Image (cartoon, rainbow, N blue to C red; front, side, top):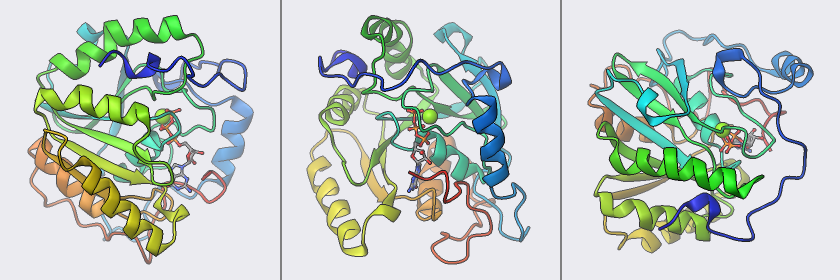
Length: 274
Ligand SMILES: Nc1nc2c(ncn2[C@@H]2O[C@H](COP(=O)(O)OP(=O)(O)OP(=O)(O)O)[C@@H](O)[C@H]2O)c(=O)[nH]1
Ligand SMILES: [Mg+2]
């Protein structure tokens, strides 16, 4: 495919002014006031029950990469998170890490602009990619795809698999399909997280999961699909199993519960969830 971000002439236009950049961590950060307010609302970042480890408890923000040559040279294996703007990529990373504000969660689509690297274990990384489907300045986005995202997804040898996050209420949009069909020929595996599953009834969840699995059956690369909710911390163990496999990490830290019941530490507060 050409670049997913610029596929549609109907790419959504911004509803708001461009998000302000802040120096913190190199990631675009929310405005100070909203950040302070969010901090006040956010649940504590230390697990109340230390026996409940999270699958990637050592995750730390590493760096923001605007040019492919600046990607960490020591990487042995990494997993990228991609999906429509606002699908819940950053929230999913926070949830897997068991931290509330590691990757910035935003109500402003398109806030993540570059490759945000998170170290999950020595030489192993999560990479939060810019969301597609939000083009404030289409030319800039196309350029970003040509010089950064396209080459990254096609040529980065350390990339062991792609996590594609889709809002479970609107899975497999045209841009999701274009991303999947463009990536599949690389032969690398795809794991789909149907995010915000808390927004669906059990029945809807089952139906959506079955439908998406069936729709992707002939994609042409190894593909798996699951439900996920950062709000409820559901689907975490399943996702962690796949990602640890890709990263070559043994599973002795994956001791968290799936969070459907007593979650020791939600990574997303009820107030933040959309
Ligand atoms: N109800 C619910 N809301 C969620 C969930 N995950 C994320 N959200 C909300 O969805 C919005 C977008 O979440 P992000 O994690 O910032 O999404 P993103 O894909 O990283 O967005 P961009 O970086 O802008 O592409 C925020 O308002 C989150 O609070 C979830 O599991 N349930
Ligand atoms: Mg994000």
